[in-house]
Image (cartoon, rainbow, N blue to C red):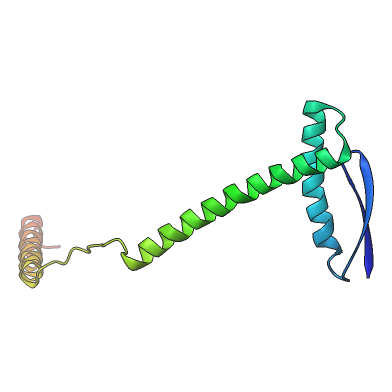
Length: 125
């Protein structure tokens, strides 16, 4: 077993854990210590049991709020999956495409005629 040493508030602790879990324990202890330090800054010296209780309650409150947000996000995701928003893509009717092709052909023919007129106006080269 591994032993991890850490501080929470104004007290040092040493705790055994499974090999490989040291990082998780340090992280959890760091979170508890951060809450405890906030309490100590606001209230001053507090008996150890009360400090740990308050810090634990603050973390539990934060975890509860996070769980509520996650549950709301899961509900919204489920709602979106069961009733996805409808996306409409405009489709151009075939007739419109045919008319556009005809207009393009006419425009090309007019451009050819205009080019011929300009060429004949310039005279022989």
